[in-house]
Image 1: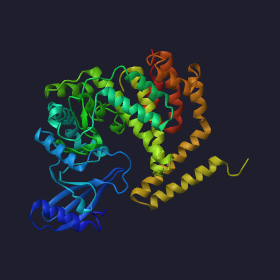
Image 2 (image 1 turned 90 degrees about the vertical axis):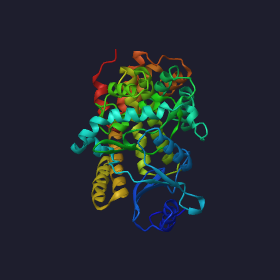
Image 3 (image 1 turned 180 degrees about the vertical axis):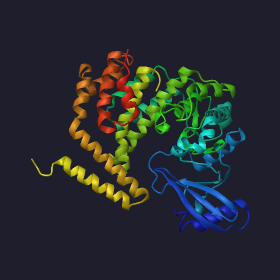
Image 4 (image 1 turned 90 degrees about the horizontal axis):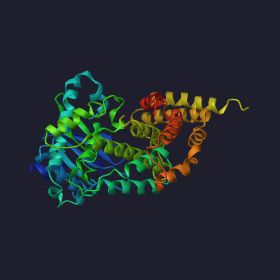
Length: 329
Length: 114
């Protein structure tokens, strides 16, 4: 697999030329982020700016959906009125660039700690709760059958919890607050079949924000079939508030405002449902911490960062205990 | 007693990592900071022994392993206030080592469980 910033630059150029149907000159390729699972590049060309995203060179474990499926989901989400970056193309094996997707560039701040704190974004933050609620209500308004032709995972809330519990036992450690949360959630998770598409990772870190608020929802790799409350609960997880814990919705809004705006946009989620999925979301983040630590401890991916994240399990244990003892956080 | 002590060695390495962080950039600088934070956890763990504190907090429920098994088997009510208090004490003991500046640490300590 070639690196789009170095030996793969000509392949990236060919991909853009194929997409636009004309010769293109690339002036710069800059890697914006390199997470554990994917890497994102800003491409500057005479034909404009583009974003290229692909699996990281050393991607580990069970990734989300393929970029081809992701591209189709994003295109359909855009048609439903959800703000997303416009999909232009996906890679082919012969490009040797990995499983990647090319989208239009959307201007905006991707670093949540910046747009959550900088005064420049105060007006944006004031609008953001309603904008997120509207975006999710539009996405969730399409029935599960709208996505039936795509290879997407999913299941009832009870199924998702079962999967997560098996994951917990595969890692094999004992975290009392996690078992408390599993036991509390077990009789409460909905057993109904999925009714809609869940973005799957709709949180502050995956929102592109400009001075008018929500510019685009990014990172659709974990999208799956579920029920509406899953996305809303995930947006309220403590870890995505970046220290702004007084504002449970992503560090910028209240639950009441989120549910009211979601209702005004045509959706329905009850406060108790949101609470259940918020507990589920915090537990899921805690499982990710356990997994990252296990990647290091097992020797699969030796990394000081992953080892250290293992100790964030204690933060999640405290958050779950607080949520279950007091009903909010 | 060894001279310097284990704590003093840890502190020396933390100082070095802080210096290294200033000379590094990007991912390596970030990892130097993560490494220094990890050594701060080790220091607190040596002073506090959170394993023992957790075991003590959960002893009325048979200890960590027995309690987790009981919760998995449905043998205990997850809303039992005595259980919530014990798990809170155990969670606080761990967080006191891992990240005492975390906002939920103070909040969880201050509020009474009915």
